[in-house]
Length: 285
Image (cartoon, rainbow, N blue to C red):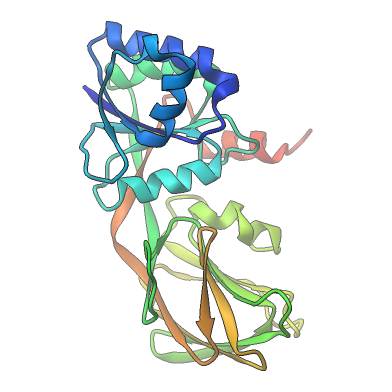
Protein backbone atom coordinates (compact mmCIF):
# COMPACT_ATOMS: atom_id res chain seq x y z
CA UNK A 1 0.00 0.00 0.00
CA UNK A 2 1.15 3.55 -0.71
CA UNK A 3 -0.09 6.38 1.49
CA UNK A 4 0.40 10.09 0.74
CA UNK A 5 0.46 12.56 3.63
CA UNK A 6 -0.11 16.32 3.52
CA UNK A 7 0.03 18.47 6.64
CA UNK A 8 0.31 22.03 7.84
CA UNK A 9 3.36 23.40 9.59
CA UNK A 10 1.46 23.60 12.88
CA UNK A 11 1.91 19.93 13.79
CA UNK A 12 4.75 20.19 16.33
CA UNK A 13 2.37 19.58 19.30
CA UNK A 14 1.33 16.29 17.68
CA UNK A 15 4.79 15.03 16.76
CA UNK A 16 4.57 12.07 19.16
CA UNK A 17 1.33 10.74 17.63
CA UNK A 18 2.66 11.23 14.10
CA UNK A 19 5.94 9.48 15.00
CA UNK A 20 4.11 6.44 16.35
CA UNK A 21 1.88 6.39 13.28
CA UNK A 22 4.84 6.48 10.88
CA UNK A 23 6.59 3.70 12.82
CA UNK A 24 3.42 1.61 12.57
CA UNK A 25 3.24 2.17 8.82
CA UNK A 26 6.90 1.18 8.43
CA UNK A 27 6.30 -2.02 10.40
CA UNK A 28 3.43 -2.94 8.09
CA UNK A 29 5.42 -2.24 4.92
CA UNK A 30 3.40 0.81 3.88
CA UNK A 31 5.19 3.24 1.56
CA UNK A 32 4.69 6.91 2.35
CA UNK A 33 4.72 9.87 -0.02
CA UNK A 34 4.97 13.11 1.97
CA UNK A 35 4.56 16.73 1.01
CA UNK A 36 7.81 18.68 1.38
CA UNK A 37 6.28 21.18 3.82
CA UNK A 38 5.40 18.55 6.41
CA UNK A 39 8.54 16.50 5.76
CA UNK A 40 10.85 19.43 6.49
CA UNK A 41 9.09 20.02 9.82
CA UNK A 42 9.26 16.36 10.85
CA UNK A 43 12.88 16.13 9.70
CA UNK A 44 13.72 18.74 12.32
CA UNK A 45 11.62 17.17 15.07
CA UNK A 46 11.97 13.41 14.60
CA UNK A 47 14.21 12.33 11.69
CA UNK A 48 14.56 8.80 13.10
CA UNK A 49 10.86 8.12 12.48
CA UNK A 50 10.83 8.84 8.74
CA UNK A 51 12.00 5.47 7.44
CA UNK A 52 8.62 4.76 5.80
CA UNK A 53 8.89 7.90 3.64
CA UNK A 54 9.95 6.82 0.16
CA UNK A 55 9.15 10.03 -1.72
CA UNK A 56 9.02 13.74 -0.85
CA UNK A 57 7.18 16.03 -3.27
CA UNK A 58 5.90 19.59 -3.60
CA UNK A 59 3.79 19.17 -6.71
CA UNK A 60 0.82 16.89 -7.51
CA UNK A 61 3.16 14.57 -9.43
CA UNK A 62 2.66 11.53 -7.22
CA UNK A 63 0.48 8.47 -6.97
CA UNK A 64 -1.01 6.78 -3.90
CA UNK A 65 -3.90 4.63 -2.75
CA UNK A 66 -5.09 7.07 -0.08
CA UNK A 67 -4.11 10.58 1.00
CA UNK A 68 -4.08 11.74 4.63
CA UNK A 69 -4.63 15.41 5.40
CA UNK A 70 -3.28 16.30 8.87
CA UNK A 71 -4.59 19.63 10.13
CA UNK A 72 -7.90 21.49 10.03
CA UNK A 73 -10.42 22.22 7.31
CA UNK A 74 -8.09 24.73 5.65
CA UNK A 75 -5.41 22.06 5.39
CA UNK A 76 -7.97 19.69 3.89
CA UNK A 77 -8.82 22.21 1.17
CA UNK A 78 -5.11 22.60 0.34
CA UNK A 79 -4.79 18.81 0.26
CA UNK A 80 -7.61 18.71 -2.28
CA UNK A 81 -5.62 21.09 -4.49
CA UNK A 82 -2.53 18.88 -4.05
CA UNK A 83 -4.47 15.79 -5.14
CA UNK A 84 -6.03 17.71 -8.03
CA UNK A 85 -8.15 15.74 -10.49
CA UNK A 86 -6.61 12.33 -9.73
CA UNK A 87 -9.58 11.30 -7.53
CA UNK A 88 -7.38 9.66 -4.89
CA UNK A 89 -9.48 9.26 -1.70
CA UNK A 90 -8.63 11.74 1.08
CA UNK A 91 -9.05 11.21 4.82
CA UNK A 92 -8.83 14.25 7.06
CA UNK A 93 -7.07 13.90 10.43
CA UNK A 94 -8.22 16.79 12.57
CA UNK A 95 -5.76 18.81 14.65
CA UNK A 96 -7.67 22.06 14.15
CA UNK A 97 -10.88 23.40 15.67
CA UNK A 98 -14.17 22.33 14.07
CA UNK A 99 -12.75 19.92 11.50
CA UNK A 100 -15.98 19.39 9.57
CA UNK A 101 -14.10 17.82 6.67
CA UNK A 102 -12.13 15.44 8.88
CA UNK A 103 -12.97 11.80 9.43
CA UNK A 104 -10.79 11.18 12.48
CA UNK A 105 -8.96 12.94 15.29
CA UNK A 106 -5.19 12.78 15.71
CA UNK A 107 -5.54 10.33 18.63
CA UNK A 108 -7.27 7.83 16.33
CA UNK A 109 -4.27 7.34 14.03
CA UNK A 110 -3.59 3.71 15.13
CA UNK A 111 -7.19 2.74 14.30
CA UNK A 112 -6.94 4.67 11.03
CA UNK A 113 -3.81 2.77 10.03
CA UNK A 114 -5.50 -0.59 10.59
CA UNK A 115 -8.63 0.44 8.66
CA UNK A 116 -6.67 1.70 5.68
CA UNK A 117 -4.27 -1.23 5.47
CA UNK A 118 -7.11 -3.76 5.79
CA UNK A 119 -9.33 -1.86 3.35
CA UNK A 120 -12.07 -1.25 5.90
CA UNK A 121 -13.31 2.04 4.50
CA UNK A 122 -15.62 3.43 1.85
CA UNK A 123 -15.46 6.60 -0.22
CA UNK A 124 -17.88 9.42 -0.90
CA UNK A 125 -17.84 11.44 -4.14
CA UNK A 126 -17.96 15.21 -3.60
CA UNK A 127 -18.67 17.63 -6.43
CA UNK A 128 -16.55 20.75 -6.97
CA UNK A 129 -17.39 24.10 -8.50
CA UNK A 130 -15.49 25.09 -11.65
CA UNK A 131 -15.02 28.84 -12.25
CA UNK A 132 -14.47 29.94 -15.86
CA UNK A 133 -14.87 33.05 -17.98
CA UNK A 134 -12.35 35.10 -15.99
CA UNK A 135 -8.56 34.99 -15.83
CA UNK A 136 -7.55 32.93 -12.81
CA UNK A 137 -3.84 32.32 -12.17
CA UNK A 138 -4.33 29.25 -10.01
CA UNK A 139 -6.57 26.26 -9.31
CA UNK A 140 -10.01 27.25 -10.71
CA UNK A 141 -12.02 24.83 -8.56
CA UNK A 142 -13.71 25.02 -5.16
CA UNK A 143 -14.73 22.17 -2.87
CA UNK A 144 -16.60 24.41 -0.40
CA UNK A 145 -17.77 27.53 -2.17
CA UNK A 146 -17.27 30.31 -4.66
CA UNK A 147 -17.93 33.72 -3.10
CA UNK A 148 -18.47 36.87 -5.13
CA UNK A 149 -18.09 39.82 -2.76
CA UNK A 150 -17.44 43.52 -2.64
CA UNK A 151 -13.92 44.73 -1.90
CA UNK A 152 -13.43 45.49 1.79
CA UNK A 153 -14.11 49.23 1.69
CA UNK A 154 -16.46 49.32 -1.29
CA UNK A 155 -20.22 49.79 -1.40
CA UNK A 156 -22.55 46.94 -2.20
CA UNK A 157 -22.38 45.06 -5.47
CA UNK A 158 -25.06 43.81 -7.84
CA UNK A 159 -24.63 40.16 -8.84
CA UNK A 160 -26.70 39.78 -12.01
CA UNK A 161 -27.29 36.04 -12.06
CA UNK A 162 -28.47 33.75 -14.87
CA UNK A 163 -29.44 30.13 -14.29
CA UNK A 164 -28.96 27.95 -17.39
CA UNK A 165 -29.19 31.07 -19.54
CA UNK A 166 -32.35 32.43 -17.90
CA UNK A 167 -32.33 35.56 -15.77
CA UNK A 168 -32.69 34.54 -12.12
CA UNK A 169 -32.07 37.61 -9.95
CA UNK A 170 -30.02 40.73 -9.41
CA UNK A 171 -28.58 40.22 -5.95
CA UNK A 172 -27.99 43.66 -4.42
CA UNK A 173 -25.85 42.71 -1.46
CA UNK A 174 -22.40 42.60 0.03
CA UNK A 175 -21.91 39.43 -1.94
CA UNK A 176 -23.23 36.09 -3.15
CA UNK A 177 -22.08 32.64 -2.05
CA UNK A 178 -22.45 29.59 -4.26
CA UNK A 179 -21.79 26.59 -2.02
CA UNK A 180 -21.53 22.85 -2.56
CA UNK A 181 -23.15 20.42 -0.12
CA UNK A 182 -19.67 19.90 1.35
CA UNK A 183 -19.37 23.66 1.88
CA UNK A 184 -22.91 24.14 3.14
CA UNK A 185 -21.57 23.94 6.71
CA UNK A 186 -18.93 26.61 6.05
CA UNK A 187 -19.38 30.20 4.81
CA UNK A 188 -22.91 29.38 3.62
CA UNK A 189 -23.98 28.35 7.13
CA UNK A 190 -22.59 31.54 8.66
CA UNK A 191 -24.88 33.71 6.50
CA UNK A 192 -27.99 31.67 7.25
CA UNK A 193 -27.92 29.22 4.35
CA UNK A 194 -29.24 25.65 4.71
CA UNK A 195 -27.17 22.58 5.51
CA UNK A 196 -27.24 19.97 2.76
CA UNK A 197 -26.52 16.27 3.10
CA UNK A 198 -23.14 15.71 1.36
CA UNK A 199 -24.47 13.46 -1.41
CA UNK A 200 -27.31 15.79 -2.48
CA UNK A 201 -26.65 16.89 -6.11
CA UNK A 202 -27.22 20.60 -5.52
CA UNK A 203 -25.69 24.04 -5.05
CA UNK A 204 -26.85 26.66 -2.54
CA UNK A 205 -27.01 30.34 -3.56
CA UNK A 206 -26.88 32.50 -0.41
CA UNK A 207 -26.73 36.31 -0.54
CA UNK A 208 -24.59 38.14 2.00
CA UNK A 209 -26.41 41.02 3.73
CA UNK A 210 -28.94 41.36 0.93
CA UNK A 211 -30.62 44.77 0.54
CA UNK A 212 -34.00 43.09 0.10
CA UNK A 213 -35.78 40.77 2.53
CA UNK A 214 -37.07 38.82 -0.46
CA UNK A 215 -33.58 37.65 -1.41
CA UNK A 216 -33.36 34.26 0.31
CA UNK A 217 -31.03 31.26 -0.04
CA UNK A 218 -31.90 29.11 -3.04
CA UNK A 219 -31.06 25.46 -3.76
CA UNK A 220 -30.50 24.51 -7.41
CA UNK A 221 -29.41 21.37 -9.22
CA UNK A 222 -25.62 21.00 -9.40
CA UNK A 223 -25.69 20.34 -13.14
CA UNK A 224 -26.92 23.91 -13.58
CA UNK A 225 -24.85 26.63 -15.20
CA UNK A 226 -24.61 29.92 -13.33
CA UNK A 227 -23.42 33.07 -15.10
CA UNK A 228 -22.88 35.97 -12.71
CA UNK A 229 -22.01 39.49 -13.87
CA UNK A 230 -20.95 41.79 -11.05
CA UNK A 231 -21.62 45.51 -11.30
CA UNK A 232 -21.48 48.37 -8.83
CA UNK A 233 -19.91 51.73 -8.02
CA UNK A 234 -16.45 50.39 -7.25
CA UNK A 235 -13.83 49.51 -9.85
CA UNK A 236 -13.39 45.93 -8.72
CA UNK A 237 -14.92 43.05 -6.79
CA UNK A 238 -13.54 39.87 -5.26
CA UNK A 239 -13.91 36.27 -6.36
CA UNK A 240 -12.93 33.81 -3.65
CA UNK A 241 -12.60 30.07 -4.19
CA UNK A 242 -12.19 28.18 -0.90
CA UNK A 243 -10.43 31.18 0.63
CA UNK A 244 -8.21 31.98 -2.36
CA UNK A 245 -9.12 35.52 -3.40
CA UNK A 246 -8.81 37.21 -6.80
CA UNK A 247 -9.59 40.83 -7.65
CA UNK A 248 -11.91 41.18 -10.64
CA UNK A 249 -12.92 44.26 -12.67
CA UNK A 250 -16.47 45.54 -12.36
CA UNK A 251 -18.53 44.17 -15.22
CA UNK A 252 -16.70 40.84 -15.38
CA UNK A 253 -18.79 37.69 -15.74
CA UNK A 254 -17.85 34.41 -14.08
CA UNK A 255 -19.40 31.10 -15.04
CA UNK A 256 -19.84 28.52 -12.26
CA UNK A 257 -20.50 24.91 -13.16
CA UNK A 258 -19.77 21.44 -11.86
CA UNK A 259 -16.19 20.25 -12.29
CA UNK A 260 -15.60 17.31 -14.66
CA UNK A 261 -14.19 15.20 -11.81
CA UNK A 262 -15.05 14.47 -8.16
CA UNK A 263 -13.12 14.67 -4.94
CA UNK A 264 -13.26 11.36 -3.09
CA UNK A 265 -13.46 11.51 0.71
CA UNK A 266 -12.74 8.44 2.85
CA UNK A 267 -15.65 7.43 5.05
CA UNK A 268 -14.71 5.28 8.04
CA UNK A 269 -16.71 2.39 9.52
CA UNK A 270 -19.50 3.47 11.88
CA UNK A 271 -19.14 7.15 10.91
CA UNK A 272 -22.28 8.81 9.55
CA UNK A 273 -23.43 12.29 8.60
CA UNK A 274 -26.15 12.72 11.27
CA UNK A 275 -23.74 11.85 14.08
CA UNK A 276 -21.05 14.13 12.67
CA UNK A 277 -23.54 16.97 12.39
CA UNK A 278 -24.73 16.59 15.97
CA UNK A 279 -21.21 16.42 17.36
CA UNK A 280 -19.72 19.27 15.34
CA UNK A 281 -22.64 21.66 15.84
CA UNK A 282 -23.35 20.44 19.40
CA UNK A 283 -27.01 19.87 18.78
CA UNK A 284 -29.09 18.80 21.81
CA UNK A 285 -26.35 19.78 24.27
